[in-house]
Image 1: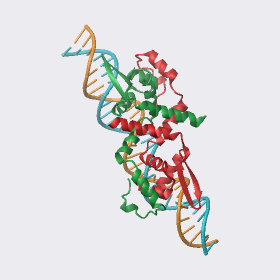
Image 2 (image 1 turned 180 degrees about the vertical axis):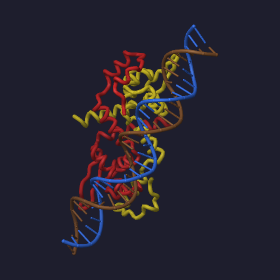
Image 3 (image 1 turned 120 degrees about the vertical axis):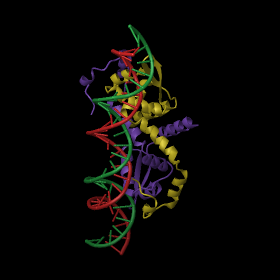
Image 4 (image 1 turned 90 degrees about the vertical axis):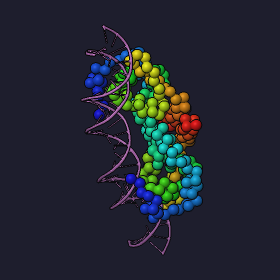
Length: 122
Length: 122
DNA sequence: TTACTATATGAACAACTGCTCATATACACA
DNA sequence: TGTGTATATGAGCAGTTGTTCATATAGTAA
């Protein structure tokens, strides 16, 4: 639980100008929240594996459960999260739902992650 | 607590070939873990704000605490996480530690996030 | 030394998250 | 209708996380 600004005024400020500049140029709460939510969604190992797998080919819930070695329920929960973020979409073929990578805007993000990973470890 | 593969063998597999391909081309556990850790580090709103602020100018712990309106201790904890991931570094000037944005590889990642955010919401 | 400042660290706790299990829903076919 | 399959949903729980508080450390200055 965060404190209010009133309760926090005892804090000394060394560089008022820098704090002021940071506050002025900072992103709004909504943008920070959305950005955070986006990173959070692709930060979970299970969801990351799902995204990378679906980036290659369509898969149904059962396939993903076998691939990830977790319950189909767990997969379904994670797909719900990914679908809500519009990172994946699905199409129905009879009783089977096929999920696929949906958001082209996500590719650069994943790629940047992979690049950063590669250049940090060599 | 995850189940072992033995306990999970009752799962039906609709497309064995897709599961096999996904397993073959999947990243290793270490890579997934590192990638996940990287995204997780920039997924927290507080750390995100710190990164974006330090991307502009050096700031000390006290400045960041005033900017973020949280305790200096909380800032210090988060800076420790960011420093461990080599996303920020610091220099000492007398008793004051100045933190700065350290990892150039992180910029594209943040930028990709901002781009994705922008193109998803318009 | 002593006093003060700036930051770091450890403990504790509330909030969140990802899983399993049990159950519900949606579709196909007889 | 009824049965079986594929997936979704809700509850519950263990593990993780971000914060505050109290305390410790590192540096400055007398």
